Length: 411
Image (cartoon, rainbow, N blue to C red; front, side, top):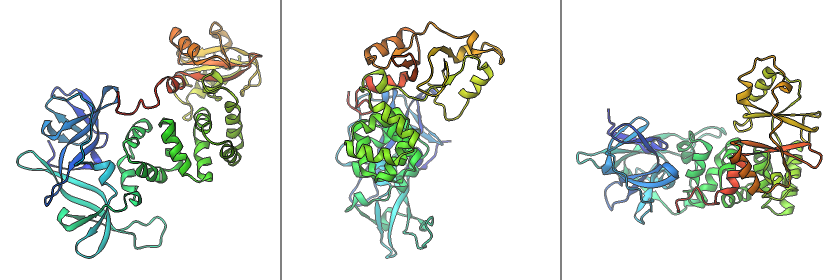
């Protein structure tokens, strides 16, 4: 059954479906238009369709809103969305705004608001869900909440940089890092920094790995050194090295001194290489095994939660030691091959020795040709003595091949 009243924060990430039930995109935000005396009305939805294109879906083309999805009449204008001056994004711009309660009880902040469908099919803001300042000294205490009508508040737009990001954080809490990055790029700089400040360190590390260089630097430069070091510790060494390569030498050294010693050493090694070479793009943490490792033991390594899917696609076999830089590289066993052999089988008997490793100085042009030619997701990287020092994965290459603004709405 179609809802006649929905809260906008819950619409973020909802699927958009055509009359046949096929998914055509997802909701990014709700566009609201202010009116002089009446509550704002929803003019439509910003949705993301294939190819990360942002388009505008007028509210008149929405036939139903049900939990987790919007149904359309099937007509979607594929022109890229462009915001007009009189329109405001609900999630990116309204949530978190401060309002003054006209009953004289003080100020509050908008955590969410409901839009309600009228008899003519239009959707209008019906009531606000607001939170007052906390009245307890306890660190985790929250202020009281209440529902109020639009006519019962006055918006305070004077200090948007001071808006609380907690409401925006709750609106994007369930987004995957890549989708969160896309949403963050839509925010004004002050709101982006405020949201980053509210994220926990692990979530912020995931976000930074997905953002373009310019936004990465804006956020990192806004963090104090101790928190910046904690976040960099949680990032993949290759992503952290790429980011730190754009910092001043002084701050880079300061942050490295504050980081975990092992993580810092990995990053120091990566910073020695040119950025568009195998050494500059590789991750220094591939899965490495001995030749007498069994299939069962290799599978156990792959199953670890912390192993990224792209690195779990293969195990590299070397002579001891088995931490990069390892002993001499011997070959690779792909995950699919592991599935075809009994648990007691030794890797030495199923080793692929035909895949030639790439040298640490191999340029990106050759790397992406090799990945494409042999349908691979990763390539082993070795030094002059054929010691394995890391692996270049397909996502590492894509990060460097795509333009910096590939997430943006521009063609």
